[in-house]
Image (cartoon, rainbow, N blue to C red; front, top):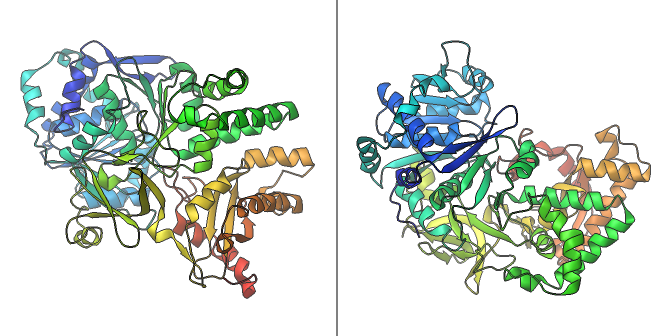
Length: 594
């Protein structure tokens, strides 16, 4: 257990490593370069000095819009070093959203990754509070200001400085560290205010049982504007692990091969895609397909050993491991000993599939408002299908309707300038209402669905959509699924196909693949998806079964607006976008009522 009181203590703890590597980044030519602890220290000091020279005071806000790159933590630590508050935003933020959050936060400085982000800022409208704009990439004019030039002379600052260290320690644990805007699945983004102690108290307890140390490495590719990724980076640095920055997810496979990390953290969609890729490749050969199915059956018989962190000793398992499981592990670089998932629910089918392939995924659960971790599976305490045991300093309870409520030092105090919204998420006795439905089993927390997303049929039956959607996504032809049917007689579903897999299937059946719109209307394609639905329906209660299906001609994405940057579906956006198609499935109210 760490004894951090502020996030500045993370920097101080990291600096104690002197000339040891703490970070890694990739040059344009593909070469990976190390960053030593003393180099990080010097760059943070250089940027902090420049911020102070501009008059940035404790409590001022600094907006940070960038992909995962070494400049991100330098900006983060420098901002916190001077007592200012950083406001991280996703790189996919639109000009309109950027303008809203810059003005809502009253940011004095904006640090951007690219000239494209700068052009976006120029389209964001009037920004009266903004005084300085910095761009991390090379700039050819005096405006915006060059990140590289601001760090000039950092080499002379890499030696420990007692005055600077004292400044770091002077920042109070209750001082505000960051404002993180929620991703907006339920409307206009709200700024979650997190103090140094909110963040530090969570880092202190979440990775105790993971066994991370200075021999470990991890790839930071989930957006650092998401609190889960940022939290884990802080924890890795405290453990002495090397953090390698991968700015784009389409570069992840190359990074995995080059870095060969020992720790892998991803949102569930990344695991789903890897599973779908393995199944798709196996499907090209009847022999490979049979081998995969056989290996997964062998693995299923050994789930208990995998769940307990043991290597099964049977001869069949060893053969399956050599022929199949090792190939799945190789997709992650071949050295990962700890697999984790967070940011969205990991479907039981996906978790079970990987367990059968010899990979135990330690799922966790939390929210931006809880800094973030509420519960997490660990190598010592693991239960498949759960999100782990609540961390030691978090109390949990359940309301009469099953909603999870929590309290503890990592729970935020308020939304930025939103008293009414703040009051709505706290009970009179100060417990935070998560909005998630769950229960405890043998001390492990199980989250069953979002309270606001439960569907209620016209017959009064409640349907939890996420478990059903996750079952559908277990099939390689399904990228995303949205169950609908609130206030209707029966449930229906919108399917967003995995078009890469679908096109491969279509070619094998002689179906034209030139046009997505035509492809999803093909009778043979619809029959195949109907078979997927029928298979899932077999495991559902009668009132939960899906009666109608519509396949849409788009694969949902962050860029398209259907997904948040952490790959959670924006249900309201999807329902509004496909309102006409949904109405079509219920025209005449065909089907049996419940």
